[in-house]
Length: 177
Image (cartoon, rainbow, N blue to C red; front, side, top):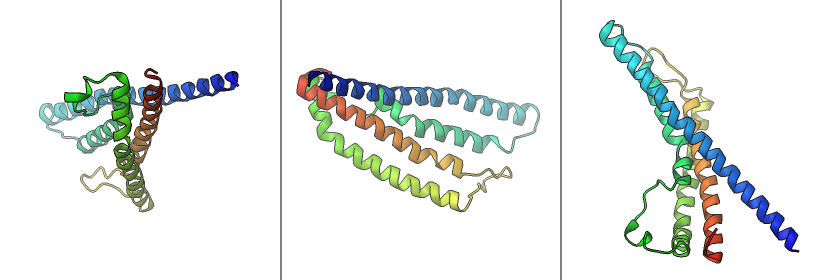
């Protein structure tokens, strides 16, 4: 019986580690994509002002890259506890108290992320169904590859929120992870 419990705990820890690693990996890629965004903007500024030849693609491409970085970085931010927190009381609580408080507020994130996932998928599917393209510039890129980032990002936040809730339950029961 003890061996079975330890095996189950080991699988749970491994699964939580996979979720953490996934969000860490995607969050780092999202962060490094901002260097690409900077390079595109720099290229456009140089082309525009040094050669009087503005690009057709830079404005929308920077929007696309920034959208991906923001939407796919949510799970990473949750993993590193970077979302807004009211620290007046929270920081003074012991780990068990913080875990219990986080469990009390967990339904809010699940409702928010659930709606974001549901509506994000609808927005993407509508765009994909019509093969929507941008009309902002002559470049006219497809928009649906960018809109898929909304439900994917919401899914990553949902996975990380589930991992956090599981850890909070363990801390609330044991007093430590």
